[in-house]
Image (cartoon, rainbow, N blue to C red; front, side):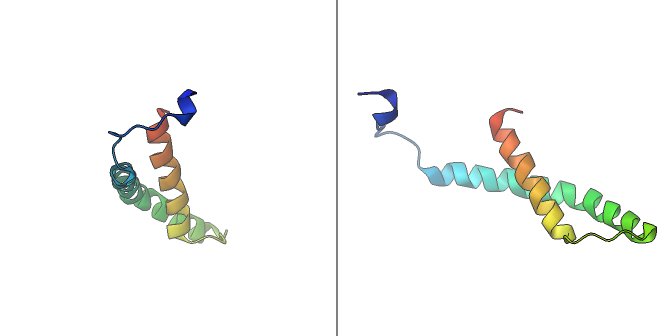
Length: 73
């Protein structure tokens, strides 16, 4: 039996891991929302427009931040 086939009976449920990820994601989202909005306002005054919304940019950055925080980067 390899290590990959081993099943732990006392393993924590996945819901806790998901909850921790959502907490980190929410924290990253709220912190990154202000800089993204300020950068977008700066772009509007410069004349360049983006196809993505402020929330789309913030979601992508927050997902990257939350994922990398669990990877140890």
